Length: 282
Length: 167
Image 1 (tube, each protein chain N blue to C red):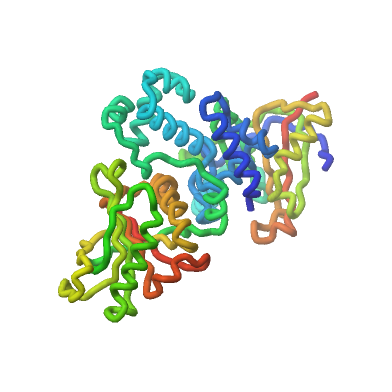
Image 2 (image 1 turned 90 degrees about the vertical axis):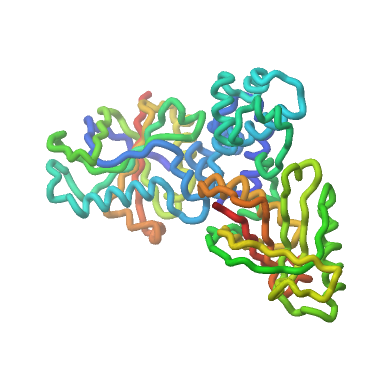
């Protein structure tokens, strides 16, 4: 098994040198591994090849620079060690679907597309064997009733939402099948996303007027298991968006994520709590 | 770990190759990587067509060659070739390819048990910087004979690594 601390140091080395002309051999040197062994261990620890990680991180940071600075595209390209604006543009388009100029014009940072720096927490989670190969499954439409809010910068409002749901359901539908549904509408990067804490219901006739009823259409999903508290959910979502999607070649279909908490939604902050994460795919 | 030095004439291998980062595929979900897949493909081919292949010196020894190309240091990508030795390059089936290793001096390292799964590349590199020898060619050869059991019995296995060297 890879030494996670050493692999985290390798990531630190890469992150410190995104704008330098480093090779995979330099990364191996930085942690005193042979090149071959380093590639193998890095892959086990991160599920990325070292070169892939380097290039994706360079592209992500350059994409950020396009939006946050006025630097010329050609300067950003050279800055992140691309040989020419053409090479940069090609690589950029492959990852983000649009060339750098268009990305700059659109002017939005979708965090789900910019690969984040892998932290020790990310590596620890991957190292626990947290991400077994997801199950692909079709689900028929289902209805849920619950409470919804707009989440901007402070994700702790989600915990408050679940408390509110518990209160509203005090006498009503418990025990039930609980879902947290995040919906990312167009422009959510600026305005925030919607989160619904809800329980599955047989139909739209709900006596409690505090609850909203939603129908989740029939979709095809990749189902992941997230083991751990709610606060670690971003680790799993980062993995889904930045590692699994790339490797699997699957594409997201709907801008939503379904978190299936099951009957015991109030234990969601326990280290051992397991929930299924459904990501809609084409 | 001290190597034995041997001289070898040109060697011709018949088998299959792969170029890239061999660990790209596995993603940690399985132990399977491109090298394992390469062996599987080669073994499956042999199982079906062995009787039609001429000039194999012995079936008891198989080779895995790692070749470093110009981009290896930059990207970690390299070539892996697995095959059997032949004494003549004739009637080579189109599905297989050939690797010709030049005559050279090899430092032969005998790896036993857990050494096989350790970072022995580094061990060899360290020996090299100590010994005064240099790499003579940008490849190394793993030689698998009857002393190599399998991955499940690595404890009882022996693997020889041939590194081309010069003074």
